[in-house]
Image (cartoon, rainbow, N blue to C red; front, side, top):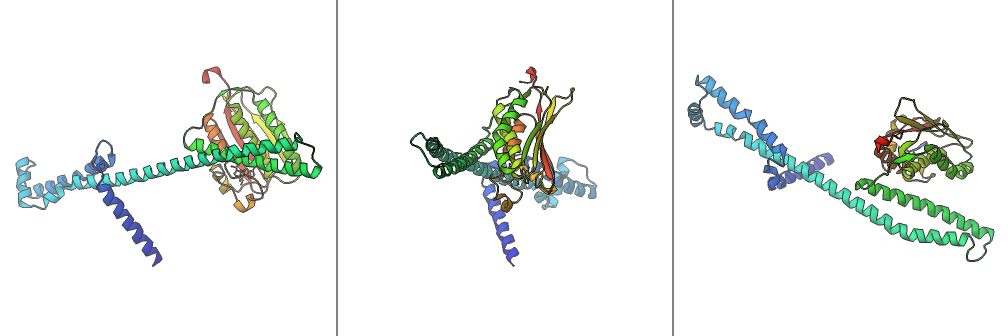
Length: 343
Ligand code: ADP
């Protein structure tokens, strides 16, 4: 009964949309709405077949005067003659319904992006001030502190940094959705970038009891990349490797390339909790976290990999993962070797 009501509701909704589309000029506009054109083509054989059959049965030739004779003898043919028009209108209305829906989705996405961008900007400004004052206090610029006070400020600072990161990710997402996310490609010494990323996460790895190591070829060629954006990708992958690891686990960064290839493949592998096979593609979607309740104990909101994937797309590269639940994961990403002609 409940299902019936739902179906009736959606049916009446379809009828309403159809009637609304009939009133829109787009439905009848052949140049803007190819559905209408397609409908006319679809309906065109109907009068030909029905009148043709009648001519054939009456042993008459296919001439204009015979067609007129047949139509006057059997007026129901007028209905078949209208078929191309009717199909054109029905298909045209379907095209308009589809267009209206797409426009609504575009408008909602635009509103969502504007909202994200506005909220993130509004949060960022006071947060930067708060963080500035916390650092000011913690570094004892306005008077000395005892250990307990320092500890409190350190915790506040760390939480503030996390919030800052979340806001940056939301801003990146709104830039991606509004098509304003850009990269600035140049020749990058990726060995240096990876070392910088490792150094920035060394303390976090030590805290988590995870060893952090890289095995990179010394003669790694320059890559075509946006230094800061690719640093974000590497930091995100290493941080995930540490976050979703076990105590005494390991995170290892490697790179491989063939002399003839124009790409270098990097890998960040961990010995952590792993990801089930069915989840491997979904983790690259915005806000997707394998198990939200499990993730509550880790920081993050499921945007890092989605942003990383966009960054790599803009580098004409790729990112993917292999994993076995309970045994660990390896994330791969590939970058183009730098060649001046490619800029
Ligand atoms: P975040 O880490 O902020 O939640 P990400 O986009 O970086 O967002 O990752 C999405 C989800 O993918 C994570 O929440 C986690 O469930 C899963 N994931 C990512 N990396 C790993 C990893 N190395 N090991 C296990 N799960 C991971």
